[in-house]
Image 1 (cartoon, helix red, strand yellow):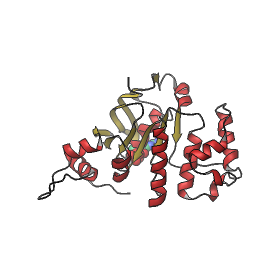
Image 2 (cartoon, protein in one colour):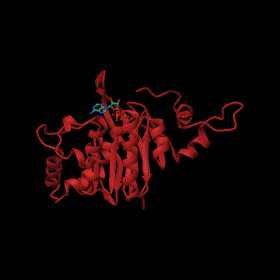
Image 3 (cartoon, protein in one colour):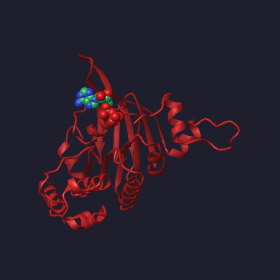
Length: 254
Ligand code: ADP
């Protein structure tokens, strides 16, 4: 059995300009994610990536369909699921006057776990910042710290929502390395991104999402072989950006 099984997941929200009507932000998404994979959900802003993740994380109610993580039904057993997943949100707010070590201790206490903050900071390469406050970290360091917070309960599955958005190229590479290290240690990782290069170089498999639906899912190489049109007079196929354009008919914008 796959570690994450999603069947026909759906979520409706009110239309922004007519609150009495709804639209499908997520419209029948099915996914099977295997243990040990880095799985990417790639799509433009508004495609439904975050909402899909939020339903899997138990942060948003599921309107229709089913999500099971490691054999546990997210709808009927949300607390059990929360115990074994790690969640890094797009933006995090922390108590301003606590240091990284103090914050990790606090998160540990919330999970009822005895943790070693230095070990966790070591995993995300922030040991030298142990006594710093989050406000004094760079963008990349903040993202790595929020991953450390997501690791306090030793999750089997780590969810990352657009982890590298807004990071400079070096910070982005550092974060990719961290994701690969965590994955090498056995963690299944599900991330959303609108960065083609990230999806292509980091993920074992990608689901391309547009208007609430998955339009294709496969390994980056298979998607390229199947969907990227062969450029004229060039023997090589294109890249994931060509696949995305061929399947959705539009380019991504930040
Ligand atoms: P993505 O992560 O791909 O950018 P989202 O899942 O954030 O997309 O959003 C999908 C759609 O659902 C968007 O049109 C967004 O405006 C809408 N949406 C998301 N959350 C809410 C909400 N809480 N209330 C109403 N509409 C929402």
